[in-house]
Every structure is written in C-alpha cells, then in structure tokens.
Image (cartoon, rainbow over all chains, first blue to last red; front, top):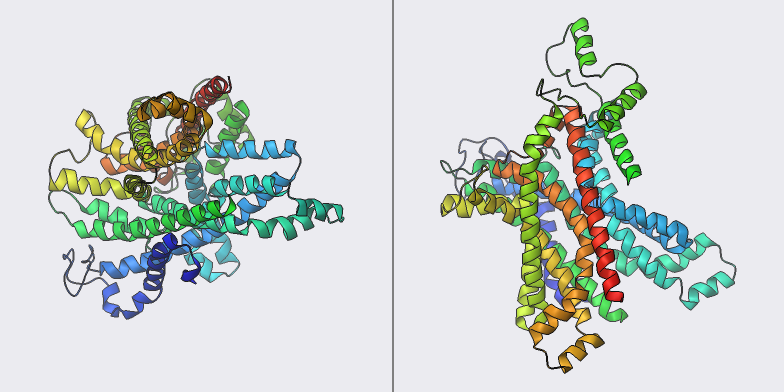
Length: 290
Length: 293
C-alpha cells in the first residue's frame, strides 16, 4: 500500500508502520517481571533494560510501548471524531445559503481564538466522576475503569474539528459550482442526495490528508493534558504522563536523563512522521489539482 | 463580543457548579451548621439560578470573589499578583515567535528551489513536532544541568526569562515561518513583484519592501489563534520552569475544585484574548484596505 504513496510520503509512512507494529506486538515479547516493580530502580540504560528503569524499577521501554498504545489510540479515535464533526459542519456550511454559511464560519472563527483546551480540561474533570457513576449503575464494567480515557477521546475530538470544517467548506464552495453538481440538481436530486452522493466522494482525498494532520494535534493535546496530570491517570500511562515523570526526575542532584529522553524521542518520531506524511500528501494533492 | 463573553461566563459557571462534589468535600466531614456557614460565606447556597445571577452581578462590579482554597485571599488579589508574570512571558514568547518566524520564512522563500529552502522547511517541521512539554525539559537538561549556563527555573531575572520564552515560542515560530513561506512564494510570482524586479531593485529590497507587505496578511490573521495557543502553552511552561504565573493557579484550582479562582482565571484569559483579537481584526482591516488601495 505504501508504494502507491508519493515518494516523499514513503519514509514517514514506513516509520509509522514500524511504530504501530512495535506498540501493538512489542509488549508481548517482554518477560512479565518487567512490568512489575523491581529491585533496580533508576538504573541507567544497559543490555537488560535498553532504556533504563523508572522510579519503581519497571522497564522503561515496555512502559513507552504500552504508553504508545494509549497515545495512538487517543490520537486515532479523537481524530476520527473530529473528522466526522468537521466534515459534516463544513459540508453543510459550504452548501447552504450564504447567510447561514457566514454565521457558521463566524462561529468557527470565534472558537479558534478561545482557549478551547482550557474548557475541555474543566469539562473532563467535571464530568469524569459522573460518567463513572452512570457506567457502574448500568453495569458497563469495562467503562468504569477507562471512563477517563473515553471522555478524553470524545472531548479532544470535540475541539480539533475546526481546521477540518474550514478546509471542507472551502472545497465544497469550489465543488458546488462544477457542472456535474448542477446537472444532479437539474435532474431533481434532493439537497442531501447531492451532498452525500456527489460532493462527499470528491472531498475524500482532502479529508484524508487533513486526517493525517489531525492525529498528531490530538496526540499533542492528550500529552499536554497528561503532562499536567489532568489527562490519563495511573495505572494507565501515555507518553504525556511518562514525559511528566521524566521532567520531574531531572534535577542537578540526581539526573535520570533516560526517563526524559526516550519518551521524548518516541513522541517526536511519531509526530514528525505524521506531520511529514500529511505535508507530503497535501503538496501532492495540490500539484495534481493545479 | 459581549454575547461571547456572557457565553464564556455561563459555560464556565455551569461546568464548575454542576460538577459533583463541592470545594469542602475532600476534608473531614464538617458539622452541618459549619458547612452551611461556609457555603453562605462563599455565596454557594441557594438554588443554582440565584447563585448564577449573583455571580454575574459581582462580576459586573469587577469582583471575582474569594478563593475557596487559599482562604481569605480574593481572586482579584491572586490574579493581580500572577497575571503580569504570565503576560510578560507571553509577550516575550510572541515577540520571539514573530521574529524567528519572519526571519526563517523570508529566508526560505528567498531561496526557492535550493537546498537551503529544504533545510529550513525541515527545521520548521521538526520544531512543530516539539511541543513545549517536550522541548522545555530537554532544554533544561542541556542548558541548565549539563552545561550550567542558565538557571533551572524561577522568575525575576532576564536569564530566567530566556529559556521559558524560547520554549514557548519555538513551535509557533515554525508555524509562522511556514505560513509566511507559503504566502511569500505565491506573492513572489505576481505582477507587481516582477515590476519591482524589472526596476532593478535588489532581491532583498523586493522581498522586504514589496512582497512582504502583501504576504503578511495570513500571518496577521493567525495572530488570534496564536495568542490563544500561547496562553494555553504558558500553563505548561510555567509548571515546567516553576514560574509563579496564573497558569499554576489554574491547574491547582481544577484539582482543588476551587471554583471561583478557576472561573476568574478563565474569564480574565478570555477577556484578554478578545481584546487582542479586536486589535488584530482592526489592524487586519487597516492593512487590507491599504493594499486594496
């Protein structure tokens, strides 16, 4: 599948594949004692523990891989939700009367300049317990343990759709003037049919490109929340919470640099690959259109 | 604008008051009489609607009420002490981001098609992928602990400002550089640029005197979101560098269920951002009109 991509997108795509595979099946190869508190706390990288161990003597590489599961899961699901909202919003704005369109895009402008992450922070912390309570009352045991994760994914999806809405709306405005859309209208197809059958398929390319750009921003947002201790909570960990542990462990007296460096590298490589992939796809789409 | 502000206040208030658990729950169970007195002191009694209108009335008079955690300190007082710190940090970062972004963007666009452009774009991509909570601790590790050039944290001297401001600015400088690069490349292929070149102006004069004035518009319209991002980012940077700004109080107020402090920080942030956006909007119109003639 990677061979169909433009040349510049292939290298980041390989990196991503390796990262996803490592995160998914990597933890299976570790002895089970690596995940438990061990005797060697704060030991520097060595052959047995290639990334060193943390404050409880757990293997850092294993923790990074398991944290990556959470980070990538949040990133992909959050971006998918933002895609759903953004595409619907943009499609409707781009295809209605200009008055409604103006109003809808003005709302997007305002949301852009409000510190959305701050509201989401309050929202998550306000409604987490409520969701937990509701879940346990209705017998969704699975939800009780991971209610915070679910609410995190939902709310991050709720704030990252703005760029998608703008792009889709701009593209819809351009597409609706094409003759095949006019033809469909003349043939008597309804508003929603034109939207779904004619406009949506032609937007698929650009939507996919911006999906690859939305995933890293959701990952960054999640890491931001977890870094502050307000996102994913123990026993679960993500790259953000590993980073915050790493940041607290460096000081002039005792400097466990590996706790900071390796989670940073994992996050950096993933973000860089995703941004590079999105960028390369966007550029190739632009040149094909012009 | 007042409508948006009212929405912000309402949403904040509802999110805080409707969340389960009051500010006095975490400690030992208080006798009902004392709890009632406490609730009355902090104006947390009565039906929600009455509380809401009372809060609005107080806000209208410029009173952000008292913190429920830092007993007997008013929110106004706390913000008055901490907000200047956040604003200085934010302004320094904004300046750095603009300076760095403009330089790098113009540098890349002036060398279209060369290796230098590729290199500059790669640098911006790398910087965008370095959010402040990654960059900050890494910079501390390198410059403060390994090299010992700069202080680890704290506030007050210019050398303590340098590292946090750079940390906050770098990702956004990269965004600005990319925006400017793209719009400069478009502008550089327009007719008036060709005329300027035909007059025999040097390449730098063409870019800085003529093309930049037009290409600056996307950057100006990005300033609003940029300010919002900087404010959010400053929360994390203040935590990393132990800076006594409003961001730390914000995080603590969520953990402590300190409703009025939380509300105060959010409302003041939003007011600041709105004023900034108004300024940006006005300058955008001014620039736009000047260009259209």
